[in-house]
Length: 281
Image (tube, rainbow, N blue to C red; front, side, top):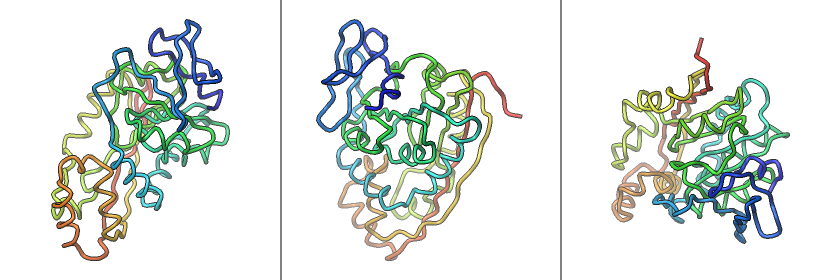
């Protein structure tokens, strides 16, 4: 566990800072949190959390799809936004899953450390090995995060829920939130044939409503490309996201089989950057 990454964390019980010991992490009050043999640490609030996060199968699909490089363009666009302004030293990937996007960003910021925060223990197991300058924490993104006040230069959110109040609390002065959300035509070629969930047309308005009491937009960009996916890639793409919770396996298999052998699929995302106390323009 990188020392500079541990230094941004806080005890979920008493909120004091944490330090590494032989078994995991411990605060000055004596609250101890073991490091799992897979490398991650669980810092859930007292009483636990009702949010289980992604299943083992969903995480496995995500790992396979990202390892194939299909979302490399998203990672690059995310890194471009993160690197706008002074180079960051501390990053947190909220709902960061396997840590693939954070690892890609860290490759471009050689002096930075990162923390993946995710509710899924299956994701955290993989994220713990994603990058030598990153660590993985199981935590509840909707509760108070196990992070100290004003210690992060960047918070990253890729296709995951946002928490505006907590983001504003943990960002250092001048720190920024970078959010990647699907645009209206994201995966458009698959939505109808596979019965996938559609993008809410009011998504950008809901995002602004959730964040603007705490942060202000400073920049926006988009990333668009067309992927060529075979049936196996389509299957893992569907399986790694929220669509997997709404489609029976047999039904999905039949619908994928009816697609052309290679499917052109539009990848379309919006990348927004937000900062406390500043307005665009």
